[in-house]
Amino acid sequence: MRAADEAALHRVARRRARQDVQRRERVDVRYSIDEKQAILAEARRHNLAGAHLVGAIVMAHLNGDLALPDQRTTADDLIDEYAALRTQLARIGTNANQIAHRLNVGGEAHPVDAAVLAKARQLVAAVQQAVSAVDTAADVTATNRRAA
Image 1 (spheres, rainbow, N blue to C red):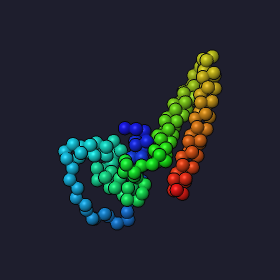
Image 2 (cartoon, rainbow, N blue to C red):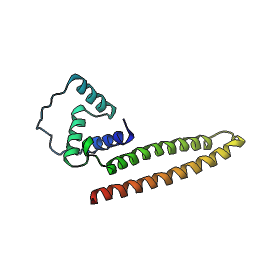
Image 3 (cartoon, helix red, strand yellow):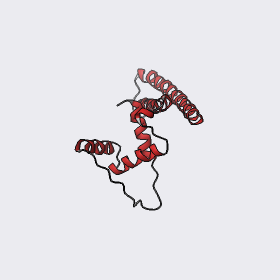
Image 4 (cartoon, helix red, strand yellow):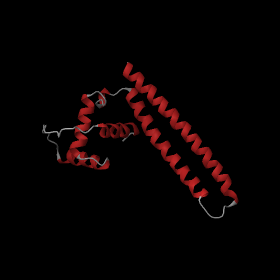
């Protein structure tokens, strides 16, 4: 699965808002055994109920937030790639912070620790700048997509 597809699915599955009133209407759908297993596996991966995942995807499509594969635009792919890139950058920042924390908390410092700590600080600053640039680019792309 491409990073863009993964990010789009995660964004859509988490966006469905709760209603004040319980949903009571049903739509029956039939799936093959393999299709059902795939749906339930994906739902578990996102920590969702299968019905919630299917409902979120259908409603996102109806609201214009999720295009079918043949309806996706390059802007949709770009926005989702930005989301995946942002997640990866955040993980790098988290790792750098863990390194800095480890070096700052305790005990005797080794001569190389100061240099590693300085590099970790530089890395965190670079990741913060990259995340900000990715956020700005994604926002511009999404705004231009809506205007088109």
